[in-house]
Length: 67
Ligand SMILES: [Zn+2]
Image 1: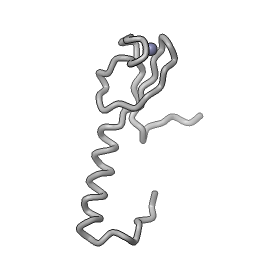
Image 2: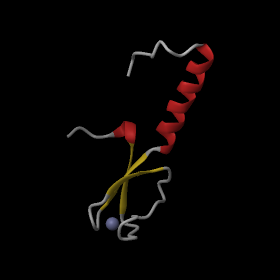
Image 3: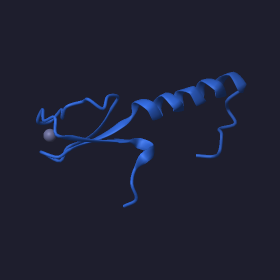
């Protein structure tokens, strides 16, 4: 994501960058070890919405491991 959309003026660009930073902070990729559900949440404390298990693996969206 190195290209910046030209439609933004400097003000819009600043908001866009802040939005990206916020998304990076809040978008936690979650994987339930019990039922294998996958979802994105804003909290690393989130329980599985499918089975309610707290045995959940959390990854930041920008920290996906290879493979
Ligand atoms: Zn589950």
